[in-house]
Length: 171
Image 1 (tube, rainbow, N blue to C red):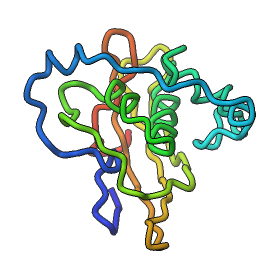
Image 2 (cartoon, rainbow, N blue to C red):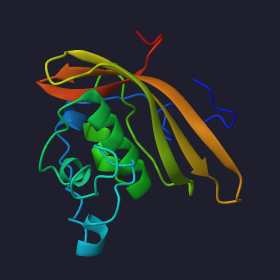
Image 3 (cartoon, rainbow, N blue to C red):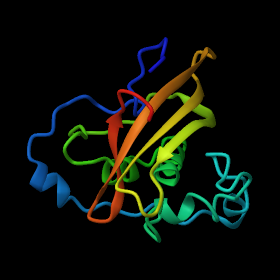
Image 4 (cartoon, helix red, strand yellow):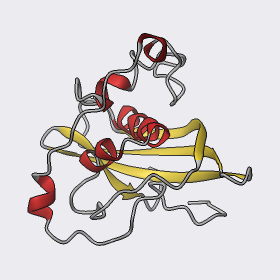
């Protein structure tokens, strides 16, 4: 991972260790309210999948619990969009319980301004594991900008894609 400003691979997730995983797994997450008509027809923050898809066609169904992303790349894109929108519940529920922190906090004031997927290895609808390399550009409240680069590993759990953490190598 290349990150000159010490951001964690999953942005600003609190690094506190999980203490009672069972209790956390049972935590109810309220769905994000549906977007307004103008938001739904706007381009998706992740850039859209396929490219240029609107928010309602791309990440909104995942963030509102309508559907679960069918591929690792689509899950990663929904997680990026969750950072843009401040949806900590989506980040929590899509992070594998073995590796997620006890708390997830996206309220640092950074503005996420662009996502670029560099490479995808496996992670399709029939796979059990996948790797997605991406770069996410951001702007800090002071106007400075940076880029988060991660090679992220995803696995299936209960037939759903989950973010596991940074991968050692792409392949």
